[in-house]
Image (cartoon, rainbow, N blue to C red; front, side):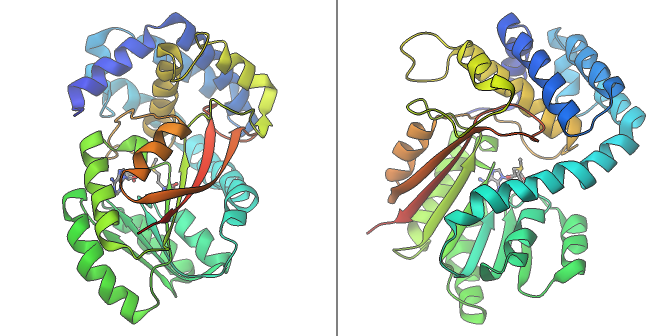
Length: 328
Ligand SMILES: C[S@@+](CC[C@H](N)C(=O)[O-])C[C@H]1O[C@@H](n2cnc3c(N)ncnc32)[C@H](O)[C@@H]1O
């Protein structure tokens, strides 16, 4: 099991991996410019990463202290503006183009597991591909959920459910919800699993295995590389740069790929999105690993799409979409 010290050590090693750091440096200059960030913010952010290289600095800053707080204070307005007006707008487009086509049938009731602030739940709801959306998260995002619901709350609900209570929630609360609305036909998890430790994943997957009906779909969007196929998108040839971090005859991520992913995850979550309560577990797996793991919990692989490196994402990490269905 990973704990906070593991995360600190992981990030410290990542920041001190020259090849990974070089990839992060080059790719952030491309991606952050593309979504509209100023040169000043980009240079400051890269300097901040440089400053975090000593172990004692990252120990203090993983939970958004001092250096990170300072960065947030200086760039608060720009971060707010880009997050709301560019980043989320591009993400919405990403969903419309790449994810919604996976939701072909009109789903009666979708559960957005690990919904975060809840904007994706709202887009799913607004796209009219489902009647009801219930967003749940291990962390409390009440203030954001209120705001999301205020714009159009009908058929949209949110609830904080700690991982330890998920089994019970799925069995009891969800049963009641299904009776009140419609049976849950799809679970969607967007960039959730790599924020869970293996132990938490086991609890979540057991909860799903023991409570969802046969035939329920599970749609997973992850920062995951498909090592067997070429990506659908290759913005600024970032795929080639990413592959250069790998060893030959690759079956799993190389250390440097893993490190690059860890630094960029930290940038996206702690520095840009300013999610301070979300755990950084750095639990990256390839698409094959996710397929193998979910099979152990009764989810049969249906279809996948290696999106790769699309334009207008804040960080350049490989993106995959994988569809499963609950089997007997
Ligand atoms: C990077 S955020 C993504 C949020 C949202 N899905 C989105 O795309 O905007 C990951 C979220 O997953 C939640 N999370 C991680 N592991 C979880 C688990 N096992 N069960 C429920 N929520 C989880 C975290 O609390 C966090 O809010």
